[in-house]
Image 1 (cartoon, rainbow, N blue to C red):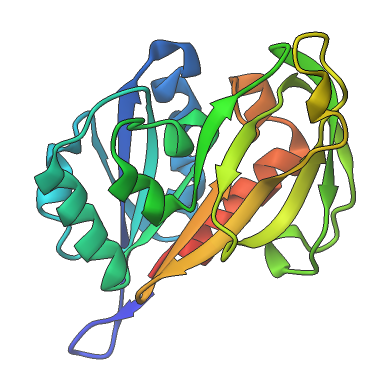
Image 2 (cartoon, rainbow, N blue to C red):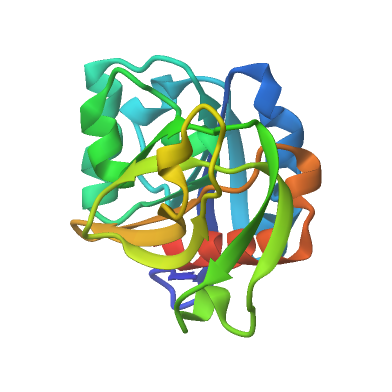
Length: 221
C-alpha cells in the first residue's frame, strides 16, 4: 500500500487491459481476478484499448489479457517507461506472451513469446522448480489444455517448467523443457508470466489460480 502525505494508507491502482482474440475470453478471464485485486486493496480500472498505455501515471500494476492484437510504437514506449519506473506487468497465456507478435520491443519486456502449442489440448505436467514464494507449497500438477512452446529470455527467473512428448508432426521436440511460469525485472519494474490459462477452466485450476494471484501481488509496485 501507499502512504498518503498525512500518513494514512491509500489504495494501490491496478489497470486491467483486455481485448484481442475472443478465443481467450479476455473479459471472463480477467473478471475472475478483479475481485481478488479489490480484496487486496487495489482500485481497479478496466480498459479495452492499449491507448491506456500512453498515460500510466500512478498505476501500480498492469494486468494484461490481449491476444493476437497490434500495438503502436508510442504505446509500447509508454508501457516500457512505466514498467522501467516501477509499474508491475502481469498476465497469463496468450494474453501476455502472444499479444503483439510483430513487436519485438514488447516481447523483450515480457521475456518470452509463444510460438506453438503442438497437438492443441494435450495432457501435460507443470513442474515446480523453485522455492520462490509465488509457488511455495506447490508441487507438480497435471493439466489437459494447450501446452505452450515458447522462445524465452535466459535472464528469466523460471518458477515452473513443462516437458514435451513427441508429436507425430514434430518428433524432435520430445524431451524439450520449456518455462511455464517466470518472473523478471525490467528496470525498477517486475514482470510476471504464467503460460497456462487458455480457458476459464484452466484459470480455475487451484494451482494455476494460486500462482496467478500470488504473481499479481508480487508484480505490483
